[in-house]
Image (tube, rainbow, N blue to C red; front, side):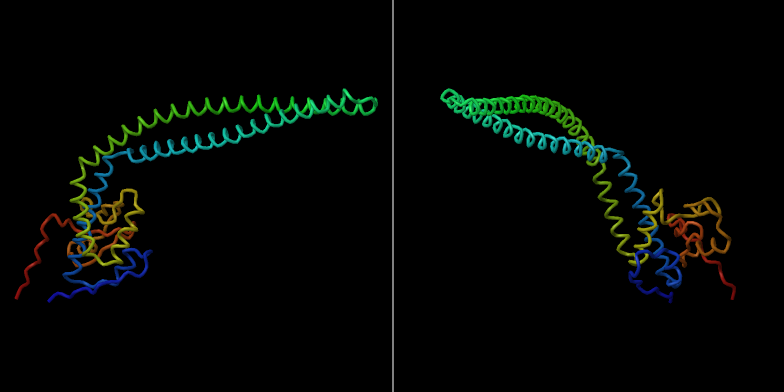
Length: 277
């Protein structure tokens, strides 16, 4: 009876296939695990291809949504600024009314004043109030001009939002059509992936995920390339290691890239040599 491997519990997400390799025994379960890894890699690679069909559409949609969000925030900021400036104009108008009232009162006093020193003092107060009125009016004019600029900017932003919204709708439709056309295929692949991953020990699955994410081509499990090379980094594999791979009884890790090298499970296993009695 073949020796079974025990369930390996997850311990350290930083572990690699190399660190796990020595903890596995030989036997039927190793072959099943290797086959599950092989099928998992096939499913993941197929899912990657499906996702690749979408191209840059998801990023383009996200970018357009971000641009619209930024412009809407700018509109809100501008509206708030206009509100503050409108209050500032109202305050300056109120100050002008107060100045006019004060000037009228000072002029009445001036008409009744006979003391030249007091007359000059009242005249000076009137001049100060006139100056304050000019400053307030200048503030009003400048603020109104700035409000007009902001409103013009808002109109430009709104026009741009309309344009970008049109682009966004088109990109979303294109993305939805692409996703819809591949939805069943992706769902079937995801189902296959889940089935494969459920058969793999947590530590090995964790190492698989980590190594897959670290590789540009997303390959953590590879076959022999040609006659004697790793299918991931193309480093030469020594004859004894090739025998171990073909045996389907050992977890073989490439010494150069750290990927698992498995036999081609799409082909039948080689027959064991006959033993002489």
